Image 1 (spheres, one colour):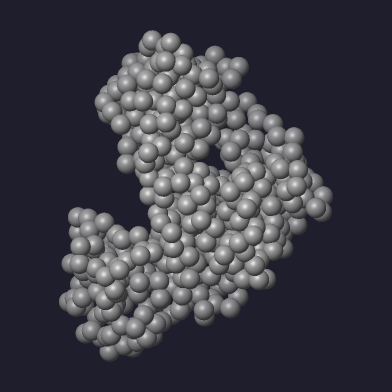
Image 2 (cartoon, rainbow, N blue to C red; image 1 turned 90 degrees about the vertical axis):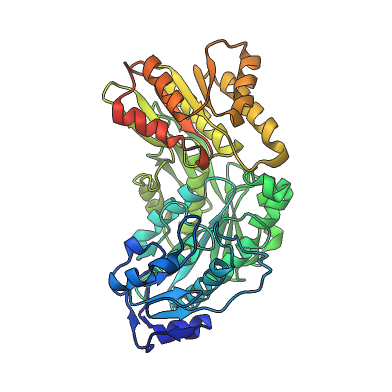
Length: 485
């Protein structure tokens, strides 16, 4: 973060100084976890489900924090932020925020982030949204831009009212690129995030079924995702997936110049001649209006082709050459954990940990990748799947479709974890008249026990479910203790 005094911060957020002279200087980043505070940092007192950050304010200052951003008086130098209206429309409230103090701190953090962005004229802000693939694409964009100048991007999926300004405040005078991932659980959320850090280049990947329970329809999801392109300036760029009709239609909602990506013949940045190697890594020809180049992605899964096209378009629009983009795509790494994370146990079992989160589109992509990884190989394909949450009325149908897809893709064994996902098991059994090929187990421990008893060297195991199911623990257990007995 840029150097700011507590007095500067108080002015930026409309707060008041408490037990502080105002001359205290913040020289490091903001943190809402007191254990991670750095000397000279700013501690943000956020209420949580189990603990309240205000209770750790004094400890954070004792550990080196220059001050605290808080909603009520604490035993430390602080900026006390004003309360916010009871109507929180457009704000994703934090769990545990029973008195509105969390909303007040979030509002102040957003103001501080905007204050910093406005003082960095050399900074270009990039935004990415979509129902699936946001984190992987954000990571790709950051890797393509880094050779062009210092780049800041969030770790993992820091994409809401807390993680978004936290990431923005990592930028300083040397930062040239700020790559942000934007999520929404309601209309107005993305528009609010764009006000914190106005993007110049924005990309929309897809409109799927994620959070359908909150939005009610894909059309409502599209309305929310399109808030990103509506926020772009007239001299900005909207990168839109031409293969998704709901995304393609967003071209009419922006003042910015539109660049279409995809396999669609009218896409400005297009993938042709897609091939998948024996490790399920995609190869394709990157076709642009200025020429074409062959790309070999070192990432697992054909779905990364679309992510790579978006990243390529963003980098090209920001001044990279086609040759630079193709070369950099060939050297990208998976940056975020539990997203197509491939590892092998000592006894030759491949574990694919894609268990960070799940929706129908991402589960379909993961199953297709599993099928590609085992095609023509002696080992068996195991899909360990759990519930997909927040689907509303579409939940039963979505789980049914995934169970049937596992059969149609010739997945050898399906292990369904948890009663909430029972429909997957039932659908697979009906689709394929399966016996032991599909099994329903109550929890992670039961899944691990089954796998350890039945896995053989050469098998490939995929774990995938919504985050709350914790299926990454299956992958961790297999890698920690082996998989074959």
